[in-house]
Amino acid sequence: MSTRRPAPAQRTGGRSSGLGTAGAAVTLAGVLVNGLAYLVPVLAARRLDPAGLSALATALGLVAIASVPGLGLQLAVAVHHARNGSSDTRRVTAVTAAACAGALVVATPLLVAALDLPVEVPALLAVTTAAVVLSSRSLGELQGGQRFLRLAAAMTLLAAGRYGGVVAGLLLGVGLTGSLVAGALTAALAPPVLARLARAPGSSAGAPAAPRLTAAQVVAGCGATLAMLVVSYADLLLARQLLPPSGSGAYAVGTVLSKGALWAPQVAAVLALPRLATGDRRSRTVALAVTGACGVVLVLASTLAGGLAFRLAGGPDYTHLGRYAPLFAAVGALYAVAFVLLNDRVAAGVRWAAAPLWVGAAALVAVAATVTPRTVPGLLLAALGTATATTLAMAVTARRPRATPTAGEPATARPSG
Image (cartoon, rainbow, N blue to C red; front, side, top):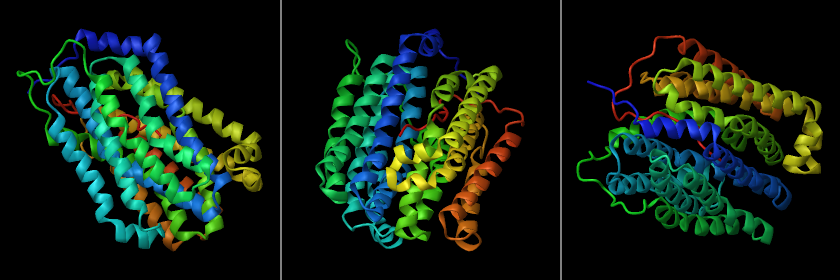
């Protein structure tokens, strides 16, 4: 079995994306994507009551989790496109989108009962999820074709569709359900727009000689990405179930800081990923250094200005929680490091690379449900302990010898928003 080497255009594209205009464009797009994602809970904290704020934060978390196969699809399409050229990926895309949306619809009774959501919310989330997954195909084609300026534009357009309607609904004061309806409608517009943007001029889709993208290739990119999101959103979902409405709302505001520390350094991992797949250990060292330094800066900043951080994230009603700001930031910073290590292991073709994350998520659920006090600081300390133990476990496994990835095997990247 042989491993295909990246084409020269791919290596050049990776270098230009890190140092040139393309890299700056993708970086700016990432900032805009995450900015819109953070704007929703920040605005919701001022427009909804604590129960509504917690419900909206939970809804966003469910979409993020349900859309994980879309991230795996994007990665698989990008790797497949870079190695084999354009091929027909429409069928596997449609099946993936239907499975993701259908899972939310089927789980409606459970979600309504366990998370205390309005009965119509899962169906609205299913529409948004399907749109995100369908759009992932276009993102993968742009990424695999090294068209980074268009990739940056596509990322921004998808974020505008995914979050723009929700923001508009909150500004118009239509409440939780009305905002999610608006969000589903704008999200549904994204797939055809991105498909047109990804269409290569002067080329026909689906080169006859190129092998088809298989379901196994998509599944290979999903497991680790799912583990990433489950462990990083587990405390938010637990807060919704274990804490009173005022406590879960406060915790939702705190997780804005966690997600900021988690996704702020994502560019380092994205730029390092192609080199990680070729066994470049220096790139892993640089990515870890940049990610760790960013986390330290954010934790220190939240220590010095915790009240201001909570005020910006949730409004004046949450300023008194500022003493918890560095702990929330530390949770996100630790997971950011763990995810770089996970990217390296999956890019190297290591089996069960995400096992420490799954164990950590299970441990957090067990400890939070049976041991820790059902308060904001109690759940927060459990989340911080889980993040610390998980990151240490990932560091230990990262010292093991690297496996050789097989051809067509996708590697994971950092999810956006």
